[in-house]
Length: 397
Length: 228
Image (cartoon, rainbow over all chains, first blue to last red; front, top):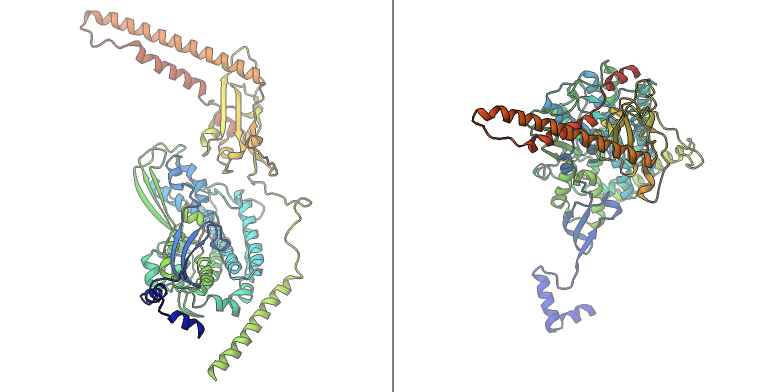
């Protein structure tokens, strides 16, 4: 009561402030600019979000990117076609195989190389393994941002198995440089590599229900994520959001099924859609559960690939030096774990690409952030940023 | 009533779902540890692991393929043609050596471990070896100089090579000039088209000589086949 009395006093400047407030301005300095990042632990790398806050509510979000810019596109203009492949790994470092495949398919389309069935099957297999590993990190760090520490331990344990398998195959744990123009770097090792993949699938099968017990249907987790940051289909399509984030809104679109590449048309799998099971369609929980279910689908694909793995040579005949490249431009799009990876390649006939443009899914997800996440609480924003699963390496490239 | 129902339902769900999660954690108490205590225990690496580049300089034939394949240009190689008086040791496969590798430097700290150099090497000279624990405070600490020649010997060979190349270039230029002169004499009777200066041809000759010095050895592919 005392406060209102004081404020009601007809003191000149104070009165003006109240008038200003009624006009929607901010005379008392309640609005604040908050810098979230670039070193914020919940922004998954070096993303900076400039937030306009009104108390605890976020009124405006402005993402600033570029802190992890490695000039992939410019570097690709100065090295030869095969030398670009190691740089592709470094775009989305959690899913190097998927990045390499996108670029290699573009070069193969340009050179009109057809790879044999064994190469295609092995490519699909390592891609899906890498997708599971990538989703493991996405879900683990999501739990970590929300406050669940334990899932991280178990999911990284599973990811470690995949990395061991891929290391034995390619020689590296993250930056594989395994998928090459016209084939693969090496054939699978002799000492029962496929058996190891089978063992992994047997090990990972019960891990998904365990994750559901641990985190997915946890009441606290649902309270934090359901009905939070719902992305509508219109916004998702307008901003070009693809991958699990788009499927979480209920839009049925998967490059692997709709525009098959590398022999994906031979596999049976179901793109997983969000349905608003715990809240609205396209909310954080939907984005989370779509990834969990996608891991199961990836396992299905790996099983089918293991069953049909044909014999053959893993490297097609390609020109030894790339001096006589066809002149022209190609665009390929593949389904990476974070959305559609598009590679636009222009060739002027020399052994160095004239232009390589990479279109990444994570970049579009970040750009949609101001559109669907404004007006939430700061604590919810952490949940939203983590749920769109961005890797800044892929955003900046 | 509805609110009360929701309140108790939330309570119930909160308790049960958390206990389910706790049960999962509890079960994991009795599983084996997956981590190792690093400095005391070490994991083994698969044979294909890409760790540190090592060069077996005796088997290197100086073909420069690894240097050209490197996307970050960290392999610096200089070669000098073997002269009859040198009498160097033969290659490990018994073939005579054609080039002295007087410089084979690898800046390991800039290496991106892509493995393109080791794949293209026809003699298996540059390869990965399991030495992942090499660290250094300065960038020089990971600089690798694999050439087996002492420093003064390198300088002597390079100087000698420069002299030989210069002589060759001179001879080629002279030959070209003589040719020009002969051609000019012939064309004196006819109306001369336009006298071509000898300078224009001499760089060509020089570049040819340079190329000769660097050309990869012809038995490269044969070696590969024999190894396989």
